[in-house]
Image 1 (tube, helix red, strand yellow):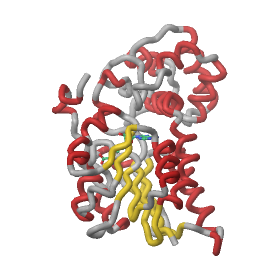
Image 2 (cartoon, protein in one colour; image 1 turned 135 degrees about the vertical axis):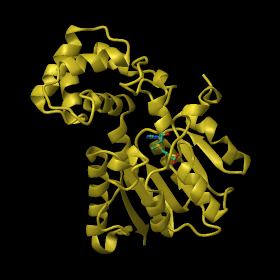
Image 3 (tube, protein in one colour; image 1 turned 30 degrees about the vertical axis):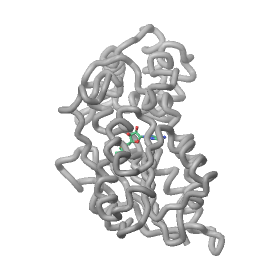
Image 4 (cartoon, protein in one colour; image 1 turned 90 degrees about the vertical axis):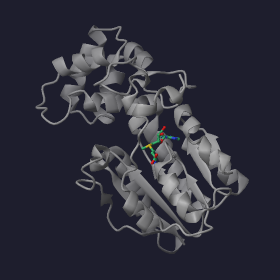
Length: 298
Ligand SMILES: C[S@@+](CC[C@H](N)C(=O)[O-])C[C@H]1O[C@@H](n2cnc3c(N)ncnc32)[C@H](O)[C@@H]1O
């Protein structure tokens, strides 16, 4: 299905936009690499300041996003439809260097809103959750074929559910297979959840866990981070926005290791602490859990 069939839900409001612009301070003529360009919210604002479309690169693994980014391509910007690890390796091999790099992790609002993508427990859809639809394995395959132990591990590690709760959910999944829709899974988790849930749906953590597993999200971040210094010019700035503690932990550790490696460090901190999106933008609920960290290449 084409994105043209989704115009009303297509809105993605970029999070922490003012802080991102302030920290990365794009200047006229600088080139820009956006490793998670999504719907081009940050890219639009940054490129409006640099006005360097032709030496900039926008990456996303989602074909809906890439289709949406075509207006940048019309202005000479290169689009790469791939995951950010593959893109980072390719750009490094080509010897490309950038003044500004941005990574805005996680899913976009349109991905969550389009029920057929299978990310949402509020709008029922197929259990899909693939960011890149060329990939074979879906959440449905995972949920219906993984062992009890594997499901427990995923829900515990990636969903951060306590181990007892993770076992209960995994056991309910195994006993009720096959599952094919997000609503079936969300209802099942709700029935089997002992926690007190007032503000968020009881299936929030299980959905996060399955999404991370389906898209191999943490491994890609971990492997991409050490390539960043190679992609920056001296004085180049990188900003990373994360949305949950597992992502932020990886970014925080990578930056900390960099900053502590003394004269050998490639990157120096711009942010001492993460800039938090909590209460930042009451009109954009996604921003509440956002955390921005930034660094500059020596
Ligand atoms: C939060 S959105 C980015 C929104 C964007 N900054 C904007 O303002 O429109 C995250 C995007 O990153 C993409 N993404 C997530 N993980 C990725 C990865 N490992 N490689 C490439 N793209 C990824 C998703 O498909 C999604 O479009």
